[in-house]
Every structure is written in structure tokens, then in C-alpha cells.
Length: 383
Length: 167
Image 1 (cartoon, rainbow over the protein chains, first blue to last red):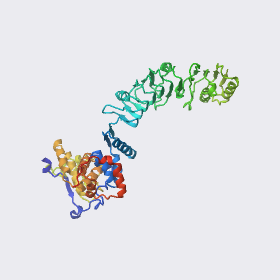
Image 2 (cartoon, chains in turn orange, cyan):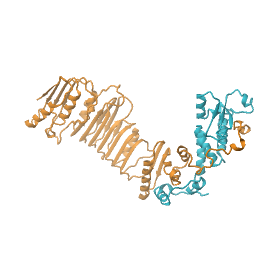
Image 3 (cartoon, rainbow over the protein chains, first blue to last red):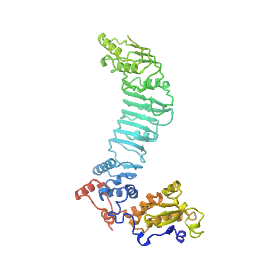
């Protein structure tokens, strides 16, 4: 061969002390021929072995005990249906993942044919099942920081016949969730992170009774259809997703969204919703109290606004207090608005709810008037 | 390119660098071969000096790495030929030699060779009993018998259905 005819070693221009040089190797008499290598190189060597074989090196010595768990590819495979085997396998996967630093992890794969799984929680992964999902017994599924393509979501929803609760946090990859399963009653969606501007997330789930959605308001919309069984909803719009330059244009679909929610018995709106309208000048909040409901539709303010309302001049609040809740949620809301509305001129609070006794009403009014106001010119009228 | 059939290495028109091993041997290497090592490339970009001293690579290992680099820098060789060179390069080498090679190629960032050597080392360990690996590489078992038994019990899953060699 051609290279053999050359001197491929390079030209040794200055051989020094030729007789002794060959003996002057680093780590002349290594006690342990292999363990002296740095972890990164040992892992590189181990990554050429089948994972099971690499895992066996844990028994060599303490130096090796956890080394293999940092392999770039962890592939767990188990196809046995024997309970004992399955339990061993699950325990082993669990231990490994707890130990693994994950620093070098490129791929995590679990081939696990088990339809007796009842709860599954996954974080920080791309859900890309190679085979058909068959989670016959799964009742609770929690996924966070996951990429879920549309077909994967559909696959999951159609393959979990008894799924009761689905929670998705910080996810991306799909924009339509159609859950027609009889069992799915609870859906929690927090922070859909699709990048497209003006993205629309559609949720259709006829048997859902609890829905919680937190969305970054900027550039994202939510449409709820076919949610006739919904009893309890919490909708929160957050205003910050690291991109304040994009315009917020929510009014156009807010009405539709709320109309679709009108049958629910309990609705909580996240206060971030007000915070995302920093240019608001006039705010009217009207509570509808209808005794035919078992409960009352309420808007429970929680937390604080994350910005001042620099333009809000008039606030009009009507029928918003619930005497059974000692004036809440109105009191908290008024307190927040008084604190944040820097140029407020007039706040009118009208409550025509005759069921409130005059002593209770007087107490509520007193509390209202005692709240500190950031606008010196603000007038608060209670009638 | 390191050649003896052109005008002689010292007068070659192509630029050369001198690389010195930790035990003082100096090798004249064409720059085109040296820059296949990411580390050497960086050094050459940063300083004018044509003499590079490698304080942790011995002459035998360095000679092997340079042979590899020179072969891969040779435009006259086909990729197939280079691939078969790689296979021949690692075959038959003792485990210790491979160990120094894997360290040197890691230091010099000759990634491709580093992976080839690591794979060869893994091949030697493949399908071997723990006892064989311990014996062959003088790995001191510092577990107590109880601790080792416990680890074997816990990770029993990894031991499943295995046919291992002890020779």
C-alpha cells in the first residue's frame, strides 16, 4: 500500500538519548492500567459497548461504580411481562436516572412494553414514541419541558382510554388538543411555548370538568370549543415571555373566549390579564350573580400585578362582592388597582346585591376606603 | 505533507513545524498534517513559533499520532485507503499502547483517531467477565465482598442472559 512505502512517522530530526527515551513514558508503572484515564475517556470507551455491558463495569471497583451512568446514550429495554422482572427493571431505571448527572446525555430511550402503567411523569424530553403507545391503565400523565408533535399528542390521547388527568407544562410542537375521551376530566396547560407569532392554541374536550390554562399572552391566543362539561376553569394570561416588543392584541378574542366559558360555575382569571394592558384608561368589571347557580361565578384575584397601570383613570366595579366571602374578591382587586393605578381619578363601586346586610356592607365600604392609593387625586365612591 | 520523495523535508516548499515529545525527541511534520489536530492548529494560529513542545506525550505515542496525521493529510490517498490504514493502525496494538494513544489524541484533539482507539479498547473488553477485566487491567477491587454482592444483586438486570468469556 502506498503509505507503507513512505515514512509516515514524520521525520525524527533530533533523537535524544535514544537508549533511554523509550523508557521515559509518562506514568511509568501505572498501578491500574485503565482507571488512570479521565472519566471522559473512560465514558468514550464504554459508549462503544452495549449499555448492559457498560453497566456491568460498575462492579469493577468504586471508581467505576457510577461512571457508566454518564453515558451519552442510555437505552433501557425490557420486554418481559413477568411482574418481578418489570419491578426490577423499573427500580433499575429509576436508580440509574437518579444517579446520572445527565451532563453528557444525548439520548434516553426506554423500550418498555407495559400496559399496567398508571402514572407517568416525564420532564425535559422529546416525546417521539417509535411504536404505538398502549397505556391501557394510565390515569395520570404529567409532561413538562417537552416537545410534543401534533401526531404524538393525538397518539397519546387516543391510546390512554382511562386517562383522568393530563398536565402539560412548558411544551411545544402542537396547537390543537382534542380530547374526546370519556375519562379525561382534568386538563392543566401551563405555558405553551410555540415560537410562531400569533399562534392559536385550540382545546376541545367535551368531558372536561376542570381546566387550567396559563398562557403567555403576547402573540398567543386560546380558543376553547366543545367544553360543555366544564365546571371549574382557571385562565391566566401572563404578559412576559422575554419579548416585550410584540404587541398585545387580546381584546379581539377575549370576548369569544369568555363567551365560551359562560356556563362554568367557577371561573378564575389570572390577574396577569390586567397587567398586560398597561395602556388601559378605563376599566369596567361587572360581576354577574345569578342565584340559579349552585355556586357563584367569581374572579379571585391572587398575587399582584407586575407593572403599574400608568394610564388608568376610571374604574367602574358593579355587583362584584360576595357577602359570604366578606367582600372578596372585590376587596383584593380594589386594593391592587389603587396601589397600581398611578393617575387614577375616579373609582366607582356599585353593589346592588340586596342580600348583603347593611352592617356587612358598611364594614366592606370602610375597608375599601382605608386602602392606600398611589394616585393623590383618586376619588373612591361606594354606593 | 511529510514526504521523502519530493525535495526533502527540510527544503520542502510546504511549511513544516517541529513537534517535540516530553522526552525530547523532535519530529518534523508538515503543517497540513499538524493542523488535523485541533489543538496544534490553535497553537499554530496563536504563535509564530515553529517548535511545539508537548509536555505530556512520549516519543512513541507521538510518532504514532504523527504517522496517522501525515497519512490523513496525504491528498494522494483515497478515503478507502485511509480507512483501511485506520483499521490496521489500531489492530494488534497492546492495550497500554492504546491507552497512551487515547490520552494523546484527546489532548491533541484528533477526534477521529480518539474515537477509533476508544472503540478498539472497548472491543478488547467486549464479552469479557468482570474478573477478566479486573485481572487484565489490574483493577483493584476495593469493594467489600458484601458491597459487591449488593451491587450485583441491585443491578441484576444488567447481568441477564449473558455469555461471557474468561480467556
